Image: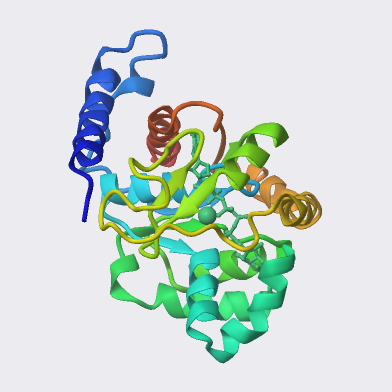
Length: 261
Ligand code: AP5
Ligand code: MG
């Protein structure tokens, strides 16, 4: 069962976010404006190293704009836990912190993008991760005559913080994300919202994190440069509160879309 104090705290924090976005005066006015629910961000890519907050931010954007999060990591983990042929193939790679083949992942994304909830836009979380995936996606979106070109947001957090975030992370079966240090559940090991048992991902050990960081530096950092060079791109400091990072992303999305017209 949900813990009421925790739910109340969540509601208060959310309300506090709305208030603080109106009253903070240290950043620019636009950086603190509440999300404009009528704004359509279109296709958005969230890029960044393991633990920068892609999943956390994708969920916040999904709530604010009503467009779906597509996390290739989540799709792979769902396949692994239900023991599909794809999951069996992916498990060893995910567990050791290396990448699943481009063809498999591109096919997964192609299937997901066919679903009607993506027509107003979507948030790709953790895809593309190689230059091959990026060029495939670029071509796919052109072929689909997507109404809006993709915007890429790269979130940046330093190595020490990332390690702390990864080793402190707990998730619920429904995908809610907690952290021992920064966002603990009211009762250790129990989801505040549905009372389910929280788990740690098998790839969230320090050893596998080191491998995932190497994979990021060698294979995904060039993807960040690919989108930086396309100019519909912004880099966001992720070492702030979740709410501040969301606000900064939302400001960037509006600015980048406005610069297209
Ligand atoms: P994936 O699941 O995508 O993992 P990842 O990229 O390593 O990223 P994470 O999910 O670990 O971190 P996140 O950035 O989402 O952070 P989160 O919001 O949870 O991929 C896993 C594996 O699948 C890959 O290694 C690969 O094998 C395979 N795979 C996936 N996509 C693939 C692809 N395209 N191609 C090939 N293979 C692929 O936050 C982390 C923690 O920090 C949480 O505890 C959270 O509460 C906390 N936190 C978040 N924001 C803040 C903040 N602002 N302040 C303090 N704490 C915060
Ligand atoms: Mg994630």
